[in-house]
Image (cartoon, rainbow, N blue to C red; front, top):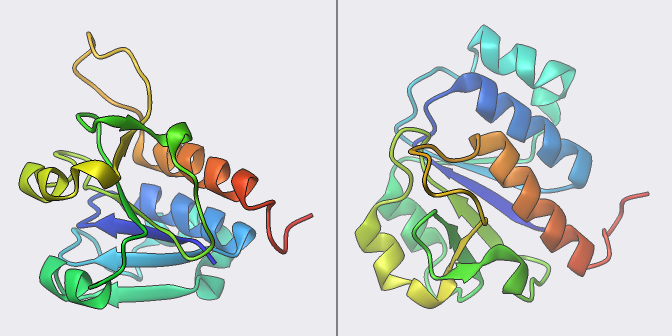
Length: 155
């Protein structure tokens, strides 16, 4: 099973969409607090449709708790626009963690710098001061990982 990790997500609609994707792809969703919405938020539930109660969800109280949870795991990939490797250059394996930062500021640069060899990016026009929507970014990377491991349990 693959793992999507959202560090301090800010938009319930993105989180709901990502949760729906996780249900439909047998992917575990990790949410790292603080997040700026409640889990009973109507936008979260609307975007997650009637899937939200089926999400394989793990909640971490903060980044330190999450880092302790994955301690010793070298199959953690940090997705960030300033990363050094492209997402499609990675050989994914079942059990990998795909970590995404909050919508407004991404992942802390120090964290990405500490894991430079495991930082990945999606190619995009960097002349624009914007990046892809979080839910879209999760889908792009997740489906490449799923493709590489032959879409386990999916038809």
